[in-house]
Amino acid sequence: MDNIGYTTLTRQSGLLGEMQVVANNIANISTTGFRREGVIFSEYVKALEGDPSLSMALGNVRVTNMEQGTLAQTGGTFDFAIEGEGFFMLEGADGPLLTRAGSFLPSETGELVTQDGLRLLDSGGAPIFIPPDAAAISLAADGTLSADGRPLTEIGLYRPVDPNDLAHRDGVRFSAPGGTEQIFGESVILQGFVEGSNVNPIAEIARMIEIQRAYEMGQQFLTQEDERVRNMIRTMGQQ
Figure 1: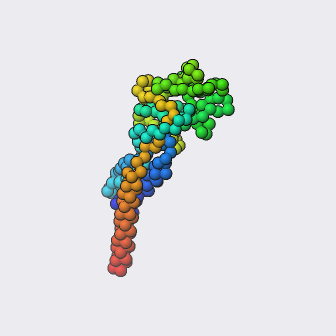
Figure 2: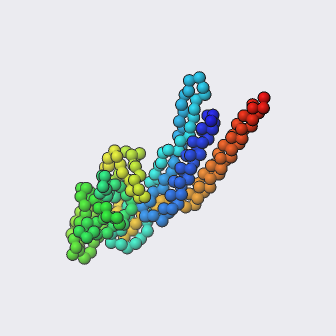
Figure 3: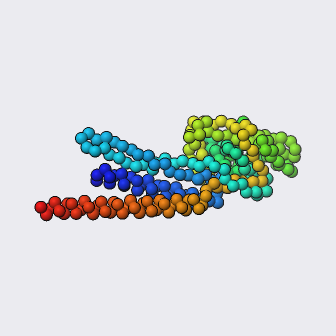
């Protein structure tokens, strides 16, 4: 296969990967705290001695869109939404995880956890405990959590030290291999709200159509190129 064939084939592979990313975005339109993803294409060029250079288009970098999602009022005591930048921090099995999905509940031991049991951490990196006899739980905009008017702790807000160091782990959670830093006074936390997905369904469907058309054009080119090579081989065989 010549250079143009490799270039087109790798581009097709990248487009297929981008289509999967867009499909995942659309599937998570209603997922609390979900962040839209995109794909960045890069070009890999290898110089070959005595031959033309080999070029490949790689769609191998995912980027996460961190725009604010729509806030929906739930009235839930342990539903929290961040207005501004930053993440809640969870205690993950392999280290801390960051998330914008703020729907929590008290565990059997009184700790605030996610629906699948990961503990929410406060500004000091410790789990948050809710007294079992508390009649009223309130949250101030600065993250101070109180039970019956008595302050319990402060919910921490964090961000990666390097904004480009955010690694997607699962649907609504991220890690920051380069470390995190705490945010003070830049964002507010609202009680009784959750933040929805920041996916724009119209934009995603439009992008899916563009990717499909680009893929079909690439496939048509590969078919034509294959036919051209076959005709050339047949012509040379008849000489």
